[in-house]
Image (cartoon, rainbow, N blue to C red):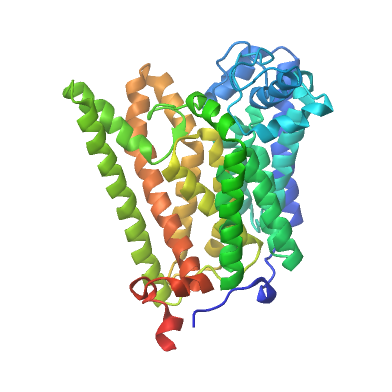
Length: 454
């Protein structure tokens, strides 16, 4: 039988140095305090220059911080006034309609509105910075620098400057991963927290993958309950979903959005420019290519995972670091293949760092996965987090969007596909090691050393 990895037998993760956590917390809060002072002092030119250098877009009018959470509060206010905010929202300063779950409108009775944007936005900033410092397991200055590079990256600053609701999803899922590791009751709390996050922004349902650490019967129960809950929820809000769908932003392939579709949408733009009048046929051709690319990435990652399993490698027993890696990793993979993701959603890459850094620290040159590969994985993660700074500064330096598109085609898209394939490889090892892996075809789990010995 395959190795069983249950919370009952988990080793506790090393929580890292408190001093380094304080450094990360102080640096994160210090930067945002400095930016707030710049804004309050009226140093708008310097304030805007900082964000431009960092690759964060604040070029909208009227400009004010925390504009994404402002939209949530504006929707609450107009909903309270009887306005259908999925069709119009005059309470929003930018005139945006509500494109999120109707669950966000339930707190409208509290009286919250756009006037509460400053203090609520600041609350999410502080909570996110504190959460990143809390999960950090840095033991050296170099490891601390990695966390600081991630926390202060363009992806993180974008989410924090806008007070985007992905910050709240991050807090809920990270909290769920830690609760999951504590006790059977903690696992129930974790599923509830993930369910709440999914009801607010849908995609966190991928974090239900923590059930891979359950026994087979529990996994099936969680899977059935999740599918049933999604069906009931979708049915209950279907009329709102029909209004939301046409209003969901669909960014182009060369701007600040990541996802597997980008590479192929860019190809479609080029092909339709060359062969005009064949748009439908070319779209079908490119769609088939995308499906083939997904299958190739999944197949390659499964093959590599089988090789790792045959050499005795796995993610290891359940602890907060592996739980964060599995939950955050499945969210990233799901989001990558399912659609476009604003650059701010890159904050989910931070959930992978505790596991990657620990393995990088503890691995040896002769190991199945040597330190150099862990180091390269971390470096690639940081490139993805910082890419927007490169793209926007390339545009500024060369005065043309060609430079930005060049960077996207030669750096961002290949980097994401390589990273996702490597991430899926490690996630496959957990699937193969779990009890649910026993129901997979023998051709898939053939490399499991435990199965071979049984």
